Length: 223
Image (cartoon, rainbow, N blue to C red; front, side, top):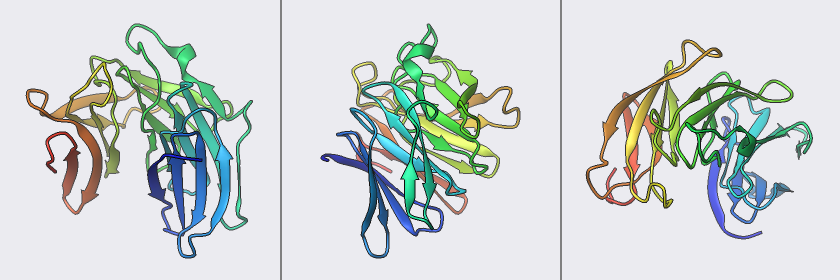
């Protein structure tokens, strides 16, 4: 277990979910810092996001292009997934508008139903994580969402996501999009609200505080 990469708190802040680039997801009691479970998810876990209802965590395995659902019962301290029912091979969904479907930073909406999966090669997949098997219900092309987004947050009825750098296909990139979710599960649309692609910039990370959306520029050392 090595290279811890991203961590998120559950909605009630009782637990921390930590992903490791060596392929594990660690669930830890936030108050005692006691590990409760460490699951092996394959060759890589770039991020693992807890759903707001605290029933699931969704994980991105970039190396194997897999999207994984983990069932979570924090009260009972039990965590697990079924490799046959809770893993989606996104590589099988690649096409011209999503040429590289390796997942980067998936997040869910407030309903804990729809996962928004940014892709290394650009584009977006929206999956219903409440069904078995999980089902992709809407997509956006790599012209609509640029590659390698790693940051997103819902504010009201709008989901904000970004596209960023860090990969050869997009060594430097900075875009922030507002997604209209009103037509889900039939479709989703994106509107570019800001871009810094004309300078040394990399959109990486996002937070909402009050009436403001904060976006981090990792390359430019700005927020």
